[in-house]
Amino acid sequence: MTQSPTSRWSPWALHGDGRSVTPGDVVHPDERLSWPRTVGVGVQHVVAMFGATFTVPLITGFPPATTLFFSGLGTLLFLLITGNRLPSYLGSSFAFIAPVLAAKTDGGIGAALGGIVVAGAALALVGVVVQLAGARWIDALMPPVVTGAIVALIGLNLAPVAWDGGGSGTGFKAQPLIALITLVAILVTTVLFRGFLARLSILLGVVVGWVLAALLGQLDQTAVTTLKEAAWVGLPQFHTPSFSLRAVVLVIPVILVLIAENAGHVKAVAAMTGRNLDRDMGRAFLGDGVATVLAGSGGGSGTTTYAENIGVMAATRVYSTAAYWVAGFAAVLLGLCPKFGALILTVPAGVLGGATTALYGLIAVLGARIWIENRVDFHDPVNLMTAAVAVIVGAANYTLTAGDLSFNGIALGTAAALVVYHGMRLIAHLRGTTPTSRRGPEPEL
Image (cartoon, rainbow, N blue to C red; front, side, top):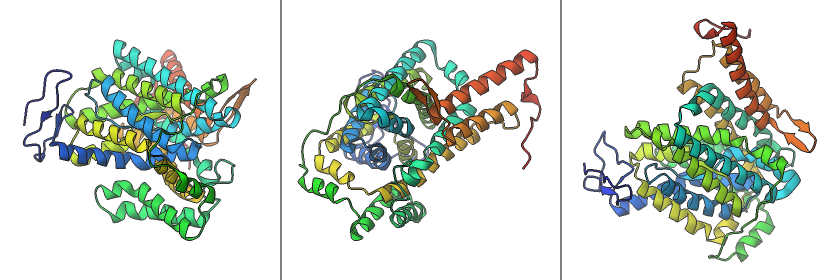
């Protein structure tokens, strides 16, 4: 294997002959295959992130082309800020969906964007602190039982949105037949195909649902007219953020999820490449934070590092950041095609209902996966109560109103996870009843 370059900004070293990867070997972030192959892998990354990245603006009502444009631009910024050492694509974060919908109810898209900007700035600040002080305090503040509970409650909190748009009359309920066919198509394609096509199950399911809706004459004719009139080349639709305390309070708890996602991404890449990347953890937070600020400043969705693209790297064993430069530039170019963005806006409510039924469920199950992979001990009553309380608060969308401020289930569930865990641990430590060495109480079924 060719030696990696030692200079931080040196060109990528060619891996072997540039044509293949030896079994058991990997292409490291500072290496690349031949450029045609690198472009091919980069395009795969675009396709892998595509379905999920577009789903978020479709649900929240943000301009899809604008979101795609800023996801590509954010990816390029992330690569610069992390010194070209962390391979990652920054797509739309699902954690923003519920708080953004709540913020839009009162203040419109401007207020929601303001909340995204502040959340991004807060994440960037966390990145600076982690880079200076180290990443161990993140693990102490948010152990796996807490991060798993937060991720799970976000998925469960979004369940009503999949059914009826959270009361708006859209979603699965609006077009049950189309929604059901979309969901079935997603499930079937997941197991019908092998390898890369199986990773496109959401996108393929949406295509099947869209075609069915078109054949049944259930596409929004206004959106179809807009598609016909849209130009092939042009700037995306930009929006300016506005700032309100309520919107900021609703959105800012999302940074806890972004911290967990970014930290998990860094650790996953480190494990797969055999390199210790803890020293770059702060840069990852900073890169995602800056990308989120940029997106919120122009009308795009908040960003996060994408697990879909980790799957592509695991399948190809190519971790070259060169492929992500290709993916970032490709996304920017697609964002500059108004007709492409108009096409996405024609996706009907029933298709979104079917797709989000699977996607929101996956978010909830991902929380459980975090518990399982980190071997969280639920015989410990502190862990048990932390997960139990936080998940119910989020799933039921507990709401607390204080004057003009309103806190929804995600914000309160996140706070509950942190307060219950650290509060119970502190009391148990002071009283000498720390229950880690014995079986705790279990609910009777």
